[in-house]
Image (cartoon, rainbow, N blue to C red; front, side, top):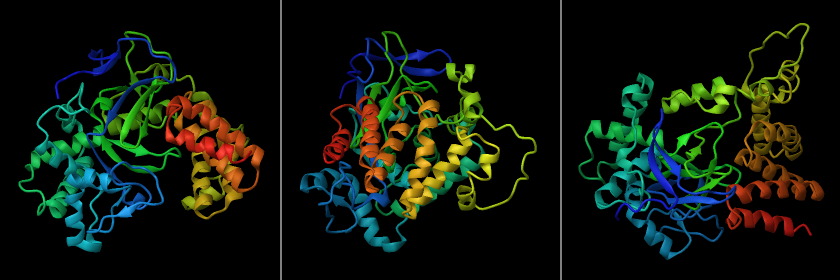
Length: 411
């Protein structure tokens, strides 16, 4: 495939940020800027049986691979489409049985190695950036990250050396794992549950901003990039690499640790939301700190942390979110609903417009309300989720259609 580029986009040298992506035309809010199929991807083990291994469709009538009996598919076409990659694991899973346990990153890198050997031309995922051009930042990695890399390399050799002949040498593997760790993506569903890992070279070309003008969502194994602000010709396209709930110093620390740069975006320089995110109560005498377990912190968050932090403080929200997760796991639907109700309004303030985190919380709340026979509240929450999702995912996305069906069923 020749380098045909992406219509309306160009690769350019972004001042202070290296290469980046720039708009050549105007994009309206909610418009699809571009789509990018995964160069390589892998379904997470926890979702096997619920999603097709090849297209990531969520279905109840999947059938399993007759050899390994662990991979599931929509039909024969999906099974055949996945075979060039699945055969790596199919044979190995049979050979190792219950001892088969490579990490998701190791599985993804194995697939990339195989694809690179059979693909000689630029792929539809690399219209502007080749995978081999990914930054590895090896010179910036500390000993802990290097040790993790070497552990992954050892696992790759252990699980795949019999099935991939002539694996790349240690230096090449070290660079490849570092490239994937810095440039890989996690594919998530509408409630932000983890479905798998992938590499999307053209999507990786976008630089980060804590006030992004696009958002990345997934339609199966295709990444879709949509505008969440008006974009004019000449504007750089910015995605967010991290969770934007937290205050400036936390975001900077996370970006430096994971991506090796210091963010200088407008949100980081103005710190406009930090005061609200870090709000604390006025105390005459702060309570003594106590050592306790995470679950106990979750259960006592309102009583203990609430004595110091305002309900809108992001660390209070973090504890409440953890508590909500515990309640969902324990099937305490009323408890989960109570936490969700406390979280949703501060989320709507702290996160940018059309945040997937906000949409996900409205979805969770809406479905909890309906399960607890609170029909009016459930429909209202689901409609708020749809309003965000129609911009972030696009009006024709199957996730949007599913939520709309849930709303129609309540009429």
